[in-house]
Image 1 (cartoon, rainbow, N blue to C red):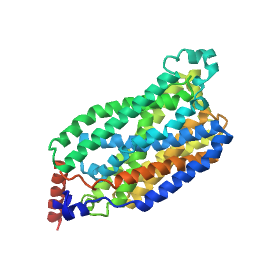
Image 2: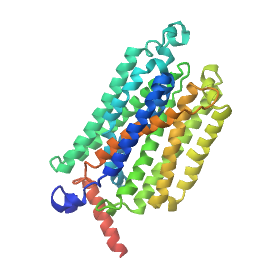
Image 3: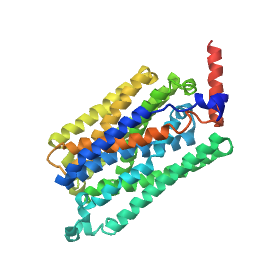
Image 4: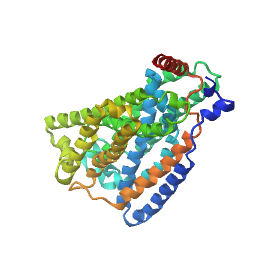
Length: 405
């Protein structure tokens, strides 16, 4: 057990790999993407902020999803969580970076949200929602969301660090006790932020399932991402001891669960809206279900659900890190397309028109986030040092290995 300690050779064995090369490349791509996007801000501010919202929504899902999965692990335990725990914690520590990157959206509110414009006062639909949809209250809620997320991240990481130091024997209990209320707070803030930032692009439309759908999208993208990270670090000691095919199989099962939840919630929202058959509700689907948008919806049904669902039914796919990583990478790419399908039809009802800022801002914000993420990942050991459940898990694995040989 010494290799999980905090001194001597144990620290070197349990240290996270350096990602200097990846970080430098991500930072270069990020800065280049942002710089290349600046002419778009000058030539077409409205399109710039639309593309920025799309890129930001896509990238924010990773740290927020990491937070949810981390709290789920603290509540339920299980060997699968230890394989990705450090990757999840690193993701939560990037929330402050995303808070800074949100500032341009505050500056571009009038380019995005129709209820912020001067003529909104003349629209009866906007007047009935003015108490909620007004600029000061909107900014106040934005501040609250990030304060809540940063506070949750700080507590999760502080108690985890206390556990590593060996000075707080009750840290595991604190993490478990906080994760239940934390998930409730996380769910509420995700729901209201999705209403504020995405749904209010079309203020006349509303869905009670929308917030849950955004939660699943964020969690699915984050889980896919940390599976890719786990494949990278699982070859190192001591994490290789728990990076067994069964643990990757467990991650694959969890990925399959979220794929099915995404499809279930998406279909449920569609079925309820269509059966209601009201002009206010159906308009959202009418703009996304015609012409080229319908083709994009079909792509999502096939490649965001049907293909991953079929692949993740196979134990061979889930138990092999390389094959599971391919499915995870596919889901990340489809999450971006899903975000595009959710957001852009609010501006382009006749069909998708791809602008170069759609690519440059995804590269810009994504590159900056990856730079921050891999910097955080390199700060902590690969495995917790004094987690009692982890120590029991490793001892059980060692006994099973001895019996097998």
